[in-house]
Image 1: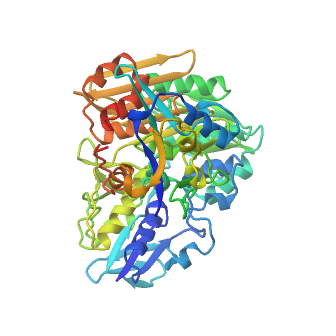
Image 2 (image 1 turned 60 degrees about the vertical axis):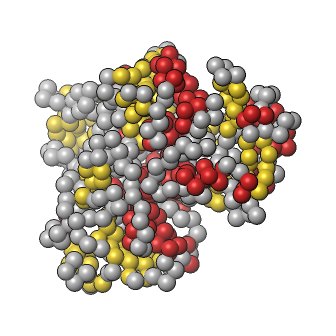
Image 3 (image 1 turned 90 degrees about the vertical axis):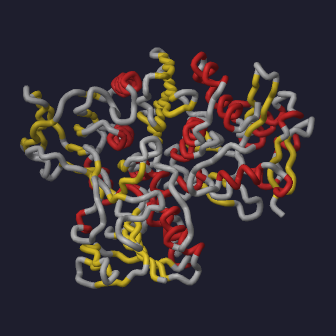
Length: 413
Length: 159
Protein backbone atom coordinates (compact mmCIF):
# COMPACT_ATOMS: atom_id res chain seq x y z
CA UNK A 1 0.00 0.00 0.00
CA UNK A 2 1.40 3.40 -0.99
CA UNK A 3 0.05 6.35 0.96
CA UNK A 4 0.92 9.85 -0.15
CA UNK A 5 0.16 12.84 2.03
CA UNK A 6 0.49 16.29 0.49
CA UNK A 7 1.10 18.84 3.22
CA UNK A 8 3.24 18.38 6.33
CA UNK A 9 1.37 20.53 8.84
CA UNK A 10 -0.51 19.07 11.82
CA UNK A 11 -3.16 17.27 9.73
CA UNK A 12 -0.55 15.65 7.50
CA UNK A 13 1.80 14.66 10.31
CA UNK A 14 -0.96 13.20 12.50
CA UNK A 15 -2.29 11.30 9.49
CA UNK A 16 1.15 9.90 8.66
CA UNK A 17 1.70 8.72 12.23
CA UNK A 18 -1.78 7.21 12.44
CA UNK A 19 -1.24 5.35 9.17
CA UNK A 20 2.07 4.03 10.41
CA UNK A 21 0.45 2.72 13.58
CA UNK A 22 -2.37 1.03 11.66
CA UNK A 23 -0.34 -0.30 8.74
CA UNK A 24 3.21 -1.15 9.78
CA UNK A 25 4.11 -2.36 6.27
CA UNK A 26 2.69 0.50 4.21
CA UNK A 27 4.82 3.00 2.32
CA UNK A 28 4.12 6.49 3.57
CA UNK A 29 5.36 9.67 1.90
CA UNK A 30 4.80 13.09 3.47
CA UNK A 31 5.32 16.03 1.15
CA UNK A 32 6.00 19.63 2.17
CA UNK A 33 7.06 22.54 -0.03
CA UNK A 34 9.12 24.50 2.49
CA UNK A 35 12.76 23.82 3.29
CA UNK A 36 11.95 23.13 6.95
CA UNK A 37 11.11 20.12 9.06
CA UNK A 38 7.36 19.89 9.75
CA UNK A 39 6.54 22.82 12.02
CA UNK A 40 3.57 24.48 13.69
CA UNK A 41 2.45 27.85 12.39
CA UNK A 42 0.75 28.26 15.73
CA UNK A 43 4.14 28.38 17.40
CA UNK A 44 5.43 31.27 15.25
CA UNK A 45 4.16 34.01 17.58
CA UNK A 46 6.12 32.43 20.42
CA UNK A 47 9.19 32.37 18.20
CA UNK A 48 8.72 36.10 17.52
CA UNK A 49 8.37 36.72 21.23
CA UNK A 50 11.65 34.94 21.83
CA UNK A 51 10.03 32.30 24.05
CA UNK A 52 11.28 29.50 21.83
CA UNK A 53 13.85 29.00 19.09
CA UNK A 54 13.02 27.57 15.68
CA UNK A 55 13.42 24.03 16.96
CA UNK A 56 10.63 24.81 19.39
CA UNK A 57 8.23 25.28 16.46
CA UNK A 58 8.86 21.80 15.10
CA UNK A 59 5.89 19.47 15.28
CA UNK A 60 8.12 16.61 16.40
CA UNK A 61 11.25 17.29 18.34
CA UNK A 62 13.65 14.44 17.64
CA UNK A 63 15.63 14.86 14.41
CA UNK A 64 15.03 11.27 13.32
CA UNK A 65 11.35 11.03 14.29
CA UNK A 66 10.06 10.57 10.75
CA UNK A 67 12.86 8.24 9.72
CA UNK A 68 12.35 5.97 12.70
CA UNK A 69 8.63 5.85 11.97
CA UNK A 70 9.28 4.95 8.35
CA UNK A 71 7.73 8.16 7.08
CA UNK A 72 9.47 9.39 3.96
CA UNK A 73 9.76 13.19 3.94
CA UNK A 74 9.81 14.76 0.50
CA UNK A 75 10.40 18.42 -0.24
CA UNK A 76 8.59 19.54 -3.35
CA UNK A 77 5.61 21.38 -4.71
CA UNK A 78 2.83 19.27 -6.17
CA UNK A 79 1.50 20.90 -9.32
CA UNK A 80 -1.34 18.55 -10.24
CA UNK A 81 -3.07 15.25 -9.56
CA UNK A 82 -3.99 12.67 -12.17
CA UNK A 83 -6.70 10.66 -10.42
CA UNK A 84 -7.25 8.38 -13.45
CA UNK A 85 -3.79 6.81 -13.24
CA UNK A 86 -3.50 7.67 -9.52
CA UNK A 87 -0.38 9.80 -9.76
CA UNK A 88 0.70 13.12 -8.37
CA UNK A 89 3.00 15.36 -10.36
CA UNK A 90 5.57 17.73 -8.90
CA UNK A 91 6.43 21.13 -10.34
CA UNK A 92 9.70 19.50 -11.38
CA UNK A 93 7.77 17.09 -13.60
CA UNK A 94 8.50 14.03 -11.49
CA UNK A 95 5.49 11.77 -10.86
CA UNK A 96 4.63 9.43 -7.99
CA UNK A 97 2.00 6.72 -7.81
CA UNK A 98 -0.41 6.47 -4.87
CA UNK A 99 -2.94 3.93 -3.71
CA UNK A 100 -4.48 6.36 -1.22
CA UNK A 101 -3.89 10.09 -1.30
CA UNK A 102 -4.45 12.65 1.45
CA UNK A 103 -4.58 16.34 0.64
CA UNK A 104 -3.61 18.33 3.71
CA UNK A 105 -2.24 21.41 1.99
CA UNK A 106 -3.62 23.90 4.48
CA UNK A 107 -4.27 27.49 3.58
CA UNK A 108 -2.41 30.64 2.61
CA UNK A 109 -2.74 34.23 3.79
CA UNK A 110 -4.77 36.63 1.70
CA UNK A 111 -3.22 39.77 0.33
CA UNK A 112 -6.10 42.15 -0.31
CA UNK A 113 -6.04 44.13 -3.54
CA UNK A 114 -4.62 47.32 -2.06
CA UNK A 115 -2.19 49.51 -4.01
CA UNK A 116 1.26 48.95 -2.50
CA UNK A 117 0.46 45.61 -0.81
CA UNK A 118 3.47 44.09 -2.62
CA UNK A 119 6.03 46.62 -1.34
CA UNK A 120 9.15 45.19 0.27
CA UNK A 121 8.26 45.96 3.88
CA UNK A 122 4.73 44.58 3.70
CA UNK A 123 4.70 41.03 5.07
CA UNK A 124 2.29 38.29 5.83
CA UNK A 125 3.10 36.29 8.97
CA UNK A 126 2.61 32.69 7.94
CA UNK A 127 5.86 30.81 7.37
CA UNK A 128 9.13 30.51 9.29
CA UNK A 129 10.64 32.60 6.50
CA UNK A 130 8.08 35.33 7.19
CA UNK A 131 8.90 35.13 10.88
CA UNK A 132 12.62 35.55 10.21
CA UNK A 133 11.96 38.63 8.10
CA UNK A 134 9.59 40.14 10.67
CA UNK A 135 11.99 39.43 13.53
CA UNK A 136 14.71 41.32 11.66
CA UNK A 137 12.49 44.35 11.03
CA UNK A 138 10.28 44.56 14.11
CA UNK A 139 12.77 46.14 16.49
CA UNK A 140 12.00 48.10 19.68
CA UNK A 141 10.53 51.43 18.61
CA UNK A 142 9.76 50.32 15.06
CA UNK A 143 6.46 51.66 13.74
CA UNK A 144 4.33 48.69 12.74
CA UNK A 145 0.88 48.82 11.17
CA UNK A 146 -1.07 45.59 11.20
CA UNK A 147 -3.88 45.01 8.76
CA UNK A 148 -6.52 42.80 10.37
CA UNK A 149 -7.56 42.06 13.95
CA UNK A 150 -9.00 38.61 13.43
CA UNK A 151 -7.77 35.55 15.27
CA UNK A 152 -4.40 35.35 13.54
CA UNK A 153 -3.99 39.13 13.68
CA UNK A 154 -4.52 39.14 17.43
CA UNK A 155 -2.05 36.33 17.98
CA UNK A 156 0.58 38.21 15.99
CA UNK A 157 -0.32 41.42 17.81
CA UNK A 158 0.79 39.89 21.08
CA UNK A 159 4.12 38.85 19.61
CA UNK A 160 4.76 42.24 18.01
CA UNK A 161 3.87 44.15 21.16
CA UNK A 162 6.26 41.99 23.16
CA UNK A 163 9.04 43.09 20.82
CA UNK A 164 8.49 46.68 21.88
CA UNK A 165 7.22 48.03 18.58
CA UNK A 166 4.81 50.97 18.25
CA UNK A 167 1.78 49.11 17.00
CA UNK A 168 -1.33 50.26 15.16
CA UNK A 169 -4.03 47.78 14.19
CA UNK A 170 -6.55 48.42 11.41
CA UNK A 171 -9.68 46.27 11.24
CA UNK A 172 -12.54 46.48 8.76
CA UNK A 173 -15.05 44.94 11.17
CA UNK A 174 -16.74 46.87 13.95
CA UNK A 175 -14.71 45.21 16.71
CA UNK A 176 -11.71 43.01 17.34
CA UNK A 177 -11.99 39.34 16.34
CA UNK A 178 -15.45 39.88 14.85
CA UNK A 179 -15.72 36.32 13.58
CA UNK A 180 -14.91 34.77 16.95
CA UNK A 181 -16.20 37.14 19.61
CA UNK A 182 -19.56 38.65 20.50
CA UNK A 183 -19.90 42.44 20.20
CA UNK A 184 -19.34 43.00 23.92
CA UNK A 185 -16.38 40.63 24.05
CA UNK A 186 -14.73 42.13 20.97
CA UNK A 187 -15.15 45.62 22.36
CA UNK A 188 -13.70 44.52 25.71
CA UNK A 189 -10.62 43.09 24.03
CA UNK A 190 -10.21 46.34 22.07
CA UNK A 191 -10.38 48.38 25.26
CA UNK A 192 -7.80 46.07 26.86
CA UNK A 193 -5.23 46.25 24.08
CA UNK A 194 -5.68 50.03 23.83
CA UNK A 195 -4.96 50.26 27.56
CA UNK A 196 -1.70 48.42 26.82
CA UNK A 197 -0.64 51.07 24.32
CA UNK A 198 -1.79 49.54 21.03
CA UNK A 199 -3.70 51.89 18.71
CA UNK A 200 -6.78 50.21 17.23
CA UNK A 201 -8.84 51.52 14.31
CA UNK A 202 -12.05 49.59 13.60
CA UNK A 203 -14.62 50.11 10.86
CA UNK A 204 -11.93 51.22 8.46
CA UNK A 205 -9.67 49.73 5.83
CA UNK A 206 -6.25 50.46 4.42
CA UNK A 207 -6.83 52.13 1.07
CA UNK A 208 -3.22 52.39 -0.09
CA UNK A 209 0.38 51.84 0.99
CA UNK A 210 3.06 54.07 -0.50
CA UNK A 211 6.82 54.15 -0.21
CA UNK A 212 7.95 57.33 1.56
CA UNK A 213 11.73 57.33 1.62
CA UNK A 214 12.76 54.48 3.94
CA UNK A 215 9.30 54.38 5.49
CA UNK A 216 5.85 53.38 4.33
CA UNK A 217 2.87 55.69 4.25
CA UNK A 218 -0.31 53.77 5.09
CA UNK A 219 -3.56 55.49 4.09
CA UNK A 220 -6.76 54.66 5.94
CA UNK A 221 -10.30 54.73 4.61
CA UNK A 222 -11.64 57.11 2.02
CA UNK A 223 -10.61 60.20 3.99
CA UNK A 224 -6.98 59.30 3.68
CA UNK A 225 -5.72 59.54 7.27
CA UNK A 226 -2.07 58.60 6.89
CA UNK A 227 0.17 56.58 9.21
CA UNK A 228 3.95 56.34 8.94
CA UNK A 229 5.26 52.80 9.29
CA UNK A 230 8.52 50.90 9.06
CA UNK A 231 6.70 47.62 8.60
CA UNK A 232 3.20 46.56 7.60
CA UNK A 233 1.91 43.13 8.62
CA UNK A 234 -0.95 41.79 6.57
CA UNK A 235 -3.25 39.46 8.54
CA UNK A 236 -6.40 39.72 6.47
CA UNK A 237 -7.51 36.11 6.56
CA UNK A 238 -6.57 32.85 4.86
CA UNK A 239 -7.84 30.74 1.98
CA UNK A 240 -7.47 27.00 1.33
CA UNK A 241 -4.64 25.86 -0.95
CA UNK A 242 -6.65 24.21 -3.72
CA UNK A 243 -5.33 25.74 -6.95
CA UNK A 244 -3.30 22.65 -7.89
CA UNK A 245 -6.49 20.57 -7.92
CA UNK A 246 -7.85 22.13 -11.10
CA UNK A 247 -8.82 19.31 -13.43
CA UNK A 248 -8.48 16.63 -10.76
CA UNK A 249 -12.22 16.12 -10.39
CA UNK A 250 -12.05 16.84 -6.66
CA UNK A 251 -15.13 18.84 -5.72
CA UNK A 252 -14.31 22.21 -4.23
CA UNK A 253 -16.49 24.87 -2.66
CA UNK A 254 -14.38 27.38 -0.79
CA UNK A 255 -12.30 24.44 0.34
CA UNK A 256 -12.27 20.74 -0.56
CA UNK A 257 -15.68 19.19 0.04
CA UNK A 258 -15.39 16.10 2.23
CA UNK A 259 -17.84 13.74 3.86
CA UNK A 260 -17.69 12.79 7.53
CA UNK A 261 -15.02 10.21 6.71
CA UNK A 262 -12.85 12.92 5.11
CA UNK A 263 -13.38 11.40 1.64
CA UNK A 264 -13.41 13.77 -1.30
CA UNK A 265 -15.61 13.30 -4.35
CA UNK A 266 -12.82 11.23 -5.99
CA UNK A 267 -12.24 7.62 -4.88
CA UNK A 268 -9.07 7.06 -2.80
CA UNK A 269 -8.49 10.78 -2.37
CA UNK A 270 -9.04 12.17 1.11
CA UNK A 271 -8.59 15.65 2.55
CA UNK A 272 -8.02 16.98 6.07
CA UNK A 273 -7.26 20.19 7.92
CA UNK A 274 -7.53 23.82 6.86
CA UNK A 275 -7.93 22.93 3.19
CA UNK A 276 -11.28 21.25 3.79
CA UNK A 277 -14.82 22.41 3.90
CA UNK A 278 -16.14 19.69 6.21
CA UNK A 279 -19.67 19.34 7.60
CA UNK A 280 -20.22 21.75 10.47
CA UNK A 281 -21.20 20.42 13.89
CA UNK A 282 -24.43 22.37 14.18
CA UNK A 283 -25.38 23.00 10.56
CA UNK A 284 -24.14 19.83 8.92
CA UNK A 285 -23.31 22.08 5.97
CA UNK A 286 -19.84 22.42 4.45
CA UNK A 287 -17.81 25.06 6.27
CA UNK A 288 -14.24 26.19 6.55
CA UNK A 289 -12.90 25.74 10.06
CA UNK A 290 -9.19 26.39 10.06
CA UNK A 291 -8.15 25.51 13.59
CA UNK A 292 -5.44 23.28 14.98
CA UNK A 293 -7.45 20.71 16.98
CA UNK A 294 -9.77 20.34 14.02
CA UNK A 295 -6.83 19.68 11.69
CA UNK A 296 -5.40 17.02 14.00
CA UNK A 297 -8.80 15.31 14.38
CA UNK A 298 -9.41 15.31 10.66
CA UNK A 299 -5.93 13.97 9.91
CA UNK A 300 -6.52 11.06 12.24
CA UNK A 301 -9.97 10.27 10.86
CA UNK A 302 -8.71 10.40 7.27
CA UNK A 303 -5.84 8.07 8.09
CA UNK A 304 -8.08 5.51 9.80
CA UNK A 305 -10.26 5.39 6.71
CA UNK A 306 -7.28 5.29 4.34
CA UNK A 307 -6.13 2.23 6.28
CA UNK A 308 -9.47 0.54 5.69
CA UNK A 309 -11.05 1.46 9.02
CA UNK A 310 -14.22 3.35 9.67
CA UNK A 311 -14.10 6.66 11.51
CA UNK A 312 -16.40 9.62 11.17
CA UNK A 313 -16.16 13.25 12.06
CA UNK A 314 -19.04 14.27 14.24
CA UNK A 315 -18.93 17.64 12.53
CA UNK A 316 -16.30 20.31 12.89
CA UNK A 317 -16.88 22.52 15.88
CA UNK A 318 -15.36 25.97 16.08
CA UNK A 319 -13.21 26.26 19.21
CA UNK A 320 -10.80 29.13 19.71
CA UNK A 321 -8.56 30.47 22.41
CA UNK A 322 -6.74 33.77 22.21
CA UNK A 323 -4.28 35.55 24.46
CA UNK A 324 -4.20 39.27 23.66
CA UNK A 325 -1.51 40.84 25.82
CA UNK A 326 -2.45 38.66 28.77
CA UNK A 327 -6.22 38.85 28.36
CA UNK A 328 -7.38 35.33 27.61
CA UNK A 329 -10.54 34.73 25.64
CA UNK A 330 -12.26 31.68 24.20
CA UNK A 331 -15.18 30.97 21.93
CA UNK A 332 -16.95 27.71 21.26
CA UNK A 333 -19.45 26.45 18.73
CA UNK A 334 -22.39 28.60 17.82
CA UNK A 335 -21.24 31.46 20.05
CA UNK A 336 -23.51 33.95 18.28
CA UNK A 337 -26.46 32.05 19.73
CA UNK A 338 -30.07 31.87 18.69
CA UNK A 339 -31.56 34.26 21.20
CA UNK A 340 -31.71 32.08 24.29
CA UNK A 341 -28.71 32.77 26.43
CA UNK A 342 -27.06 34.52 29.32
CA UNK A 343 -24.33 37.13 29.28
CA UNK A 344 -22.23 38.06 32.30
CA UNK A 345 -20.31 41.31 31.77
CA UNK A 346 -17.78 42.69 34.23
CA UNK A 347 -16.28 45.66 32.39
CA UNK A 348 -14.16 46.83 35.33
CA UNK A 349 -12.34 43.52 35.72
CA UNK A 350 -12.28 42.49 32.06
CA UNK A 351 -14.31 39.37 32.68
CA UNK A 352 -17.04 38.16 30.41
CA UNK A 353 -19.01 34.96 29.96
CA UNK A 354 -21.75 34.20 27.48
CA UNK A 355 -23.58 30.88 27.27
CA UNK A 356 -26.01 30.24 24.43
CA UNK A 357 -28.65 27.53 24.43
CA UNK A 358 -31.06 25.81 22.14
CA UNK A 359 -33.78 24.33 24.32
CA UNK A 360 -31.76 22.98 27.28
CA UNK A 361 -28.62 22.18 25.26
CA UNK A 362 -25.55 24.42 25.23
CA UNK A 363 -24.71 25.35 21.64
CA UNK A 364 -22.13 28.08 22.08
CA UNK A 365 -20.02 30.03 24.55
CA UNK A 366 -17.68 33.02 24.73
CA UNK A 367 -15.41 33.84 27.64
CA UNK A 368 -12.89 36.46 28.66
CA UNK A 369 -10.78 36.07 31.75
CA UNK A 370 -11.64 32.42 32.37
CA UNK A 371 -8.94 29.79 32.07
CA UNK A 372 -9.99 27.07 34.50
CA UNK A 373 -11.98 24.16 33.08
CA UNK A 374 -12.97 26.00 29.89
CA UNK A 375 -12.72 22.70 28.01
CA UNK A 376 -15.92 21.63 29.74
CA UNK A 377 -17.71 24.18 27.57
CA UNK A 378 -16.63 22.13 24.59
CA UNK A 379 -17.68 18.97 26.39
CA UNK A 380 -21.17 20.27 27.04
CA UNK A 381 -21.62 21.46 23.46
CA UNK A 382 -20.13 18.38 21.83
CA UNK A 383 -22.05 15.85 23.89
CA UNK A 384 -25.29 17.75 23.22
CA UNK A 385 -26.00 17.12 26.87
CA UNK A 386 -29.52 17.91 28.00
CA UNK A 387 -28.94 20.22 30.92
CA UNK A 388 -32.33 19.78 32.58
CA UNK A 389 -32.34 21.65 35.88
CA UNK A 390 -28.80 22.85 35.21
CA UNK A 391 -29.95 25.24 32.54
CA UNK A 392 -31.79 27.40 35.05
CA UNK A 393 -28.77 27.29 37.36
CA UNK A 394 -26.51 28.41 34.50
CA UNK A 395 -28.90 31.18 33.50
CA UNK A 396 -28.66 32.42 37.10
CA UNK A 397 -24.91 31.89 37.39
CA UNK A 398 -23.07 31.01 34.15
CA UNK A 399 -19.79 30.62 36.02
CA UNK A 400 -21.03 27.22 37.21
CA UNK A 401 -20.40 25.62 33.83
CA UNK A 402 -17.91 23.05 35.12
CA UNK A 403 -20.29 21.95 37.85
CA UNK A 404 -23.01 21.75 35.22
CA UNK A 405 -20.76 19.59 33.08
CA UNK A 406 -20.09 17.22 35.96
CA UNK A 407 -23.69 17.21 37.04
CA UNK A 408 -25.35 16.85 33.67
CA UNK A 409 -22.82 15.17 31.37
CA UNK A 410 -21.01 12.97 33.90
CA UNK A 411 -24.01 12.51 36.18
CA UNK A 412 -21.65 13.10 39.08
CA UNK A 413 -24.21 14.98 41.11
CA UNK B 1 -0.90 -3.69 34.60
CA UNK B 2 -1.35 0.04 34.38
CA UNK B 3 -3.01 1.77 37.25
CA UNK B 4 -5.32 4.71 37.29
CA UNK B 5 -7.03 7.03 39.70
CA UNK B 6 -10.39 5.79 40.82
CA UNK B 7 -12.71 8.36 42.29
CA UNK B 8 -15.68 7.33 44.40
CA UNK B 9 -17.44 10.61 45.00
CA UNK B 10 -19.82 9.08 47.52
CA UNK B 11 -16.90 8.80 49.94
CA UNK B 12 -15.72 12.41 49.52
CA UNK B 13 -16.26 14.70 52.50
CA UNK B 14 -14.86 17.80 50.79
CA UNK B 15 -11.87 18.05 53.13
CA UNK B 16 -9.64 19.26 50.23
CA UNK B 17 -6.66 17.20 51.43
CA UNK B 18 -6.24 16.09 47.80
CA UNK B 19 -6.01 19.66 46.52
CA UNK B 20 -3.50 20.56 49.23
CA UNK B 21 -1.41 17.48 48.55
CA UNK B 22 -1.47 18.07 44.79
CA UNK B 23 -0.38 21.69 45.01
CA UNK B 24 2.34 20.79 47.52
CA UNK B 25 3.60 17.91 45.40
CA UNK B 26 3.78 20.01 42.25
CA UNK B 27 4.53 23.52 43.50
CA UNK B 28 5.75 23.11 47.06
CA UNK B 29 2.87 25.14 48.43
CA UNK B 30 -0.46 24.41 50.05
CA UNK B 31 -2.58 26.32 47.58
CA UNK B 32 -5.74 24.69 46.23
CA UNK B 33 -5.83 27.14 43.32
CA UNK B 34 -2.71 25.40 41.99
CA UNK B 35 -4.15 21.91 42.40
CA UNK B 36 -4.64 19.68 39.39
CA UNK B 37 -7.44 17.82 41.11
CA UNK B 38 -10.46 19.86 42.01
CA UNK B 39 -13.29 19.11 44.42
CA UNK B 40 -16.61 20.45 43.20
CA UNK B 41 -19.28 21.29 45.71
CA UNK B 42 -22.84 20.55 44.71
CA UNK B 43 -24.75 22.43 47.34
CA UNK B 44 -28.18 21.57 46.01
CA UNK B 45 -27.38 17.86 46.19
CA UNK B 46 -25.15 17.97 49.26
CA UNK B 47 -22.36 16.22 47.38
CA UNK B 48 -18.66 16.82 46.89
CA UNK B 49 -17.08 15.51 43.71
CA UNK B 50 -13.32 15.30 43.18
CA UNK B 51 -12.40 15.51 39.53
CA UNK B 52 -9.21 15.33 37.53
CA UNK B 53 -7.75 14.12 34.24
CA UNK B 54 -8.90 10.71 33.02
CA UNK B 55 -5.69 10.12 31.00
CA UNK B 56 -7.66 9.38 27.81
CA UNK B 57 -5.99 6.81 25.58
CA UNK B 58 -6.26 9.06 22.53
CA UNK B 59 -6.04 12.27 24.46
CA UNK B 60 -7.49 15.39 22.92
CA UNK B 61 -4.97 17.61 24.69
CA UNK B 62 -2.08 15.56 23.37
CA UNK B 63 -3.47 15.36 19.85
CA UNK B 64 -4.15 19.08 19.70
CA UNK B 65 -0.75 20.23 21.01
CA UNK B 66 1.06 21.92 18.14
CA UNK B 67 4.55 21.44 19.54
CA UNK B 68 4.56 17.90 20.97
CA UNK B 69 4.70 19.15 24.55
CA UNK B 70 2.25 16.54 25.87
CA UNK B 71 3.57 13.00 25.77
CA UNK B 72 2.72 9.62 27.21
CA UNK B 73 4.69 8.38 30.20
CA UNK B 74 5.50 4.84 29.11
CA UNK B 75 5.37 3.52 32.69
CA UNK B 76 2.21 5.10 34.06
CA UNK B 77 0.35 5.86 30.85
CA UNK B 78 -0.13 9.43 32.05
CA UNK B 79 -0.26 12.21 29.50
CA UNK B 80 2.45 14.52 30.77
CA UNK B 81 3.03 18.20 29.98
CA UNK B 82 6.69 18.89 29.24
CA UNK B 83 6.96 22.44 30.51
CA UNK B 84 10.19 23.22 28.70
CA UNK B 85 8.48 22.48 25.38
CA UNK B 86 5.03 23.96 26.10
CA UNK B 87 4.64 27.40 24.55
CA UNK B 88 1.50 28.25 26.50
CA UNK B 89 -0.79 28.47 23.48
CA UNK B 90 -3.69 26.95 25.48
CA UNK B 91 -5.11 25.01 22.56
CA UNK B 92 -5.19 21.91 24.75
CA UNK B 93 -7.35 23.71 27.32
CA UNK B 94 -10.16 24.16 24.80
CA UNK B 95 -9.60 20.80 23.11
CA UNK B 96 -10.11 18.75 26.31
CA UNK B 97 -13.87 18.23 26.64
CA UNK B 98 -13.45 17.30 30.30
CA UNK B 99 -11.99 20.67 31.28
CA UNK B 100 -9.09 19.05 33.14
CA UNK B 101 -6.07 20.74 31.57
CA UNK B 102 -5.70 24.35 32.60
CA UNK B 103 -3.53 27.36 31.88
CA UNK B 104 -1.44 28.75 34.72
CA UNK B 105 -0.75 32.44 34.17
CA UNK B 106 2.13 32.47 36.68
CA UNK B 107 4.15 29.97 34.67
CA UNK B 108 2.77 30.72 31.22
CA UNK B 109 2.30 26.96 30.75
CA UNK B 110 -0.53 24.49 31.12
CA UNK B 111 -0.90 21.97 33.91
CA UNK B 112 -2.67 18.67 34.24
CA UNK B 113 -2.55 15.55 36.35
CA UNK B 114 0.53 13.45 35.61
CA UNK B 115 -0.22 10.76 38.20
CA UNK B 116 2.83 12.01 40.14
CA UNK B 117 5.00 9.56 38.24
CA UNK B 118 3.07 6.59 39.65
CA UNK B 119 2.51 7.64 43.27
CA UNK B 120 -0.39 10.10 43.20
CA UNK B 121 -0.22 12.43 46.18
CA UNK B 122 -3.99 12.99 46.13
CA UNK B 123 -4.70 9.30 46.62
CA UNK B 124 -2.15 9.03 49.43
CA UNK B 125 -3.61 12.07 51.16
CA UNK B 126 -7.27 11.13 50.85
CA UNK B 127 -8.44 10.08 54.33
CA UNK B 128 -11.68 8.41 53.25
CA UNK B 129 -10.69 6.28 50.28
CA UNK B 130 -12.62 8.46 47.86
CA UNK B 131 -9.50 8.66 45.68
CA UNK B 132 -7.56 5.45 45.17
CA UNK B 133 -4.92 4.37 42.71
CA UNK B 134 -5.86 0.94 41.45
CA UNK B 135 -5.48 -1.40 38.51
CA UNK B 136 -6.93 0.32 35.48
CA UNK B 137 -9.28 -2.57 34.75
CA UNK B 138 -11.15 -1.94 37.96
CA UNK B 139 -12.09 1.61 37.32
CA UNK B 140 -14.86 3.37 35.54
CA UNK B 141 -12.12 5.47 34.04
CA UNK B 142 -11.55 2.82 31.43
CA UNK B 143 -15.09 3.27 30.25
CA UNK B 144 -14.57 7.01 30.19
CA UNK B 145 -11.37 6.50 28.28
CA UNK B 146 -13.13 4.30 25.78
CA UNK B 147 -15.53 7.01 24.82
CA UNK B 148 -13.01 9.75 25.34
CA UNK B 149 -10.75 8.11 22.81
CA UNK B 150 -13.28 7.79 20.05
CA UNK B 151 -12.04 9.54 16.98
CA UNK B 152 -15.50 10.65 15.99
CA UNK B 153 -15.17 13.05 18.92
CA UNK B 154 -18.66 12.07 19.98
CA UNK B 155 -18.35 11.42 23.67
CA UNK B 156 -21.56 10.21 25.21
CA UNK B 157 -21.77 10.53 28.94
CA UNK B 158 -21.72 7.13 30.49
CA UNK B 159 -19.85 7.54 33.75
